[in-house]
Length: 121
Image 1 (cartoon, rainbow, N blue to C red):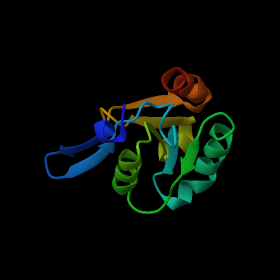
Image 2 (cartoon, helix red, strand yellow; image 1 turned 120 degrees about the vertical axis):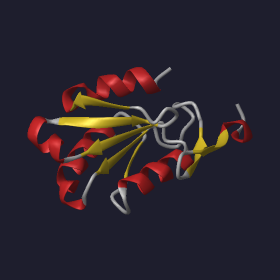
Image 3 (tube, rainbow, N blue to C red; image 1 turned 90 degrees about the horizontal axis):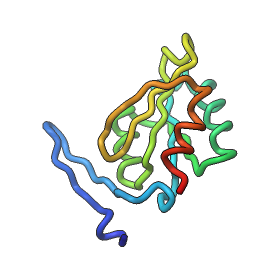
């Protein structure tokens, strides 16, 4: 796969997005940790600190969640972990997949196993 092959521009309903569809093991970052709001950054940094030990990870709290998703799509990050207010209540996170934009909710305790099954080859 070349970078030219990985580059894609998608037209959405009211928007467009640039996506680098790199294989997870080729992406600069395998996972991004994104707090929904800055007041959730303590929990988000805790999750990030745990993930960065085993994965190429990045932390981003600037701008709206939609803009942060778009930034990660454009650089090829295959998975974004979102920390929201439910995270504080039930210790779960939302994982968004870059290519399909599908989201799943998982307990934080299952996060490493889930990501490991998706990004390692």
